[in-house]
Length: 157
Image (tube, one colour):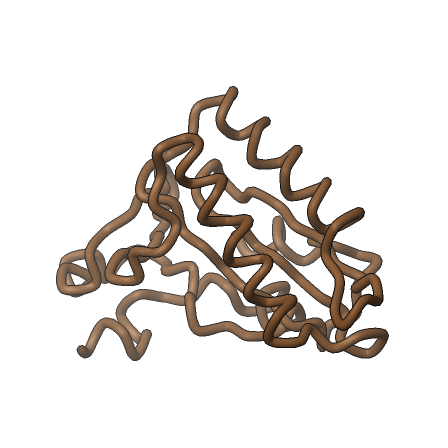
């Protein structure tokens, strides 16, 4: 299962900083296109840090999760630039009536399905894999984003 994510943003190094936002529902095709277009516009044309362009990429994964990545070897994402990315995600959510900021829900995957579940119910899905919301670098996401729910720290909370 992890193989799909090994090639995410091949032009960015493994130590790139990432942010993951999970939608409160699976997006429609039209909503997905809207999100992907906005991510591309923001990361390629609008995202700056102290007036300088950041090398960044964004993707919508499985119609549920937005991943933003910044190569901080070129330009560090400042507080203001991170705020601008949060503002962009909030505006997209408002436009399509989706909440990308409810951190009590996580995405999990079995052999046949992907779904969002409340953290308090993770122990009911021990045969699933969790898209680890705690990963912080692109390298971690590429190699270790999907982890067994049964051994994940959030399962014991």
